[in-house]
Length: 132
Image (cartoon, rainbow, N blue to C red; front, side, top):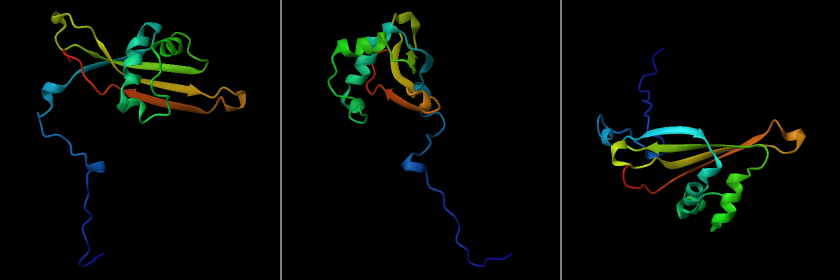
């Protein structure tokens, strides 16, 4: 079939995101480790949730106290499963610990008729500390 003067379909990057050129971000790469959250992670979770750019885009109540976040981390409700992402230091000889950079959670329905339904959430640290 000949369509004559058909227009060519142009593709545009989604959301204005253009892939980086080869080798541009090679020095910025950080190793990420994903693991289950434990109760000792409560303070890092508080730091992430306290960032204005994080709680602004969620349904969380802003300005939660450290005690509220600690209680949520130590006693998660039934059906809530959380994973954390840690950035591992580039140079482990410097003595810099890993840093929690994000959290993801899966919330299963509490009602027995809704056990097949789940919600998920994700929060990512916006600011970086030295050593990463």
